[in-house]
Figure 1 (cartoon, rainbow, N blue to C red):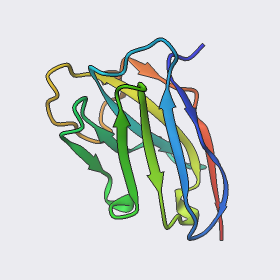
Figure 2: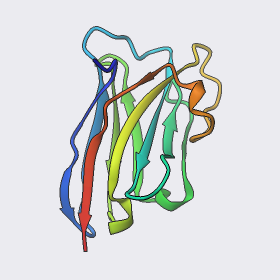
Figure 3: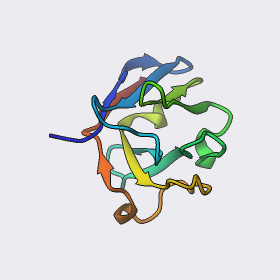
Figure 4: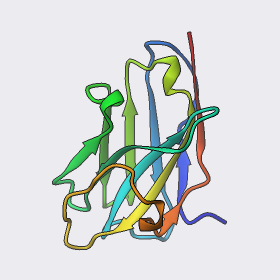
Length: 129
């Protein structure tokens, strides 16, 4: 059983939008940076975005800047990734991961996966051309 649970994936046409969620019942996400990763067919898993515990910092990989928005609601222990203007190259399995950061230092996207204490099982996003 995976500690985190992603939802919201699906099939969408190029230019469309999807919203992903990351949560886990009974688990407080508050002290954690939450990161989104994706793994596209034939490629290594890559970092997409991250957000600090207090939402005072967020970062994105260059290919999604201006199109994706990460946010969180600590009261609901949920982190969101709103994806707009989707492209076929956004296709992949999207994962969320948690990095313990109780002092809300800035987050950096991706990096050594050994930094992340918790992962989800992933949700499939498919963008058709």
